[in-house]
Amino acid sequence: MIGVPLWLVGVVVLCGLAGWGVPRLIARIPEPVPKDGEEAVDRYGPVAALPGLAWRAALVSAVAGGLVAGSVGLDWPLLFLLPLVPVAVALAFVDLHTHLIPTKVVWPTLGGTAVLAAMAALADGDPVALLHAVVGAVVVFVFFHALWWFYPAGMGYGDVRLSAVVGFVLGYFGWAELLVGVYGAFVVFAVLGVVRAALRRDRTVLRTPLPFGPFLLGGVVAGIVLGGTLWGHLVSG
Image 1: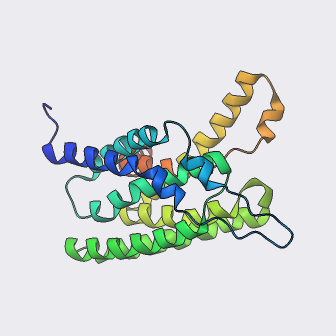
Image 2: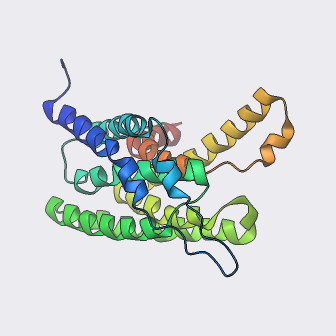
């Protein structure tokens, strides 16, 4: 492909292949333990068995991986970004179809990402980036927890947990990426809700729950790809 580095083509192919395995990843997610008096429900199995999920996940993974890698370049942060792509895609599809973000996936993902990010920061000679990532995770998590505490009906606690991963990743790259990514997720989420209600000509649609996880994860891509540029335009006026 003319003008496209060979390594970037390899990243796109690699992410696409990883995305192809998303149905198997979803099928392996442990089901939530039922509360007293509740029956066990197979929530994730039906999602993993959705027709066409493999190729759709592969396409989304390839595009997301290509955008992120193209923005970051052939650099150490790819060490923790690329493994995150298929996991994020899996979480997005699960949330879309179940309105759940599995805790047993989020915390191991945060832990694994933190370890790989530490290795990337040390290899890159930039330990400050790791400090920014930790601060970003804490700040975003506290912000989301406060939103949930004030209005729990407006946000699931799975989004609060996921926000720590989002804040960590975006914080690694800087405050511009973090602000643009998180704020952009809210803006696109709100606009889509209004557009959906307008198309259906039904204001009650605004009260229909809409999973926020996919928008939050999409904000990571937007923050990395557009954060620095958008913030520069905003600051310069």
